[in-house]
Length: 315
Ligand code: UDP
Ligand code: MG
Image 1 (cartoon, rainbow, N blue to C red):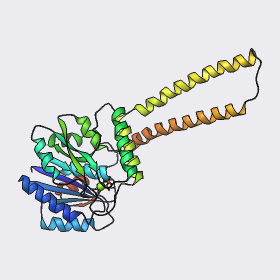
Image 2 (image 1 turned 120 degrees about the vertical axis):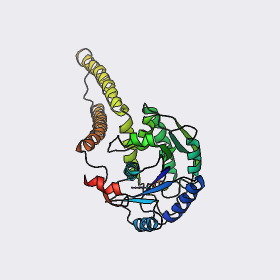
Image 3 (image 1 turned 90 degrees about the horizontal axis):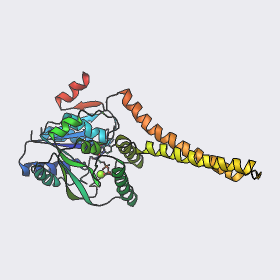
Image 4 (image 1 turned 135 degrees about the vertical axis):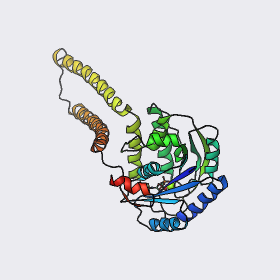
């Protein structure tokens, strides 16, 4: 197999036929032996039926049907676990990532790169809030991590077999794939493309899922929030010590001790707030440790036409 294409699918029934046609045209143009691996991530619409139909007419179409919605990153991970290709593409099902860009990705890879990701020059049809939060999130993340996670890129990319093998050895529960791929190293580069509007249907990424994803990215690749808490603790205690000296001075030397309710309550509220935030940050890290300690499988497959996918799970 020369190329494998991984497509996570969540309620994409109206996009799949067109996506399939465009992907097929691309691989035929490149003239490569290929497989398309679709992961049905607990869709509530007819996506699975459409996948069955595609698989019936073309045996390059493989599908993995999850027992429920496990989330986009996990769906891609399942694909990575099962693909056979020398080169592996990750692409969204909603045609926001134009399949034709795979030709550029593939050609660029031939110049000796293990990873070629697609950087968005433009993003059509996204809300202002999403553009704003995404822009700043990626920039902050890249500043607080020690590895270089490229900004303005999604998971649309082509990666070499070597990288896939390494990703399979990273069993983290809270996946942040683009971080893991950056962490692996090798020769990485990018092409730019214009991200399109979603072809049909609605986004499966609610703000809740995006917030979780952002926190997964930060906690998987940075300890800075924990360090900030520690530094802040020192700063606040230093400040408190100075205030204490001043209070003793005014009590015993100046003998001036009016009861000051305002300053007292403000201090209590302020310190209380800082403590809550600190506990919250520690909690975010702890809960992720806890998830990893439970050591549950990342996903559960209900059905698949990839033979080894089902048998592996029984072991
Ligand atoms: N997706 C998924 N599971 C989810 C949410 C999304 O597999 O829980 C898939 C979805 O079908 C699409 C890709 O992940 O192929 C990107 O999702 P979406 O287009 O909804 O996100 P957006 O582009 O709005 O960030
Ligand atoms: Mg999309």
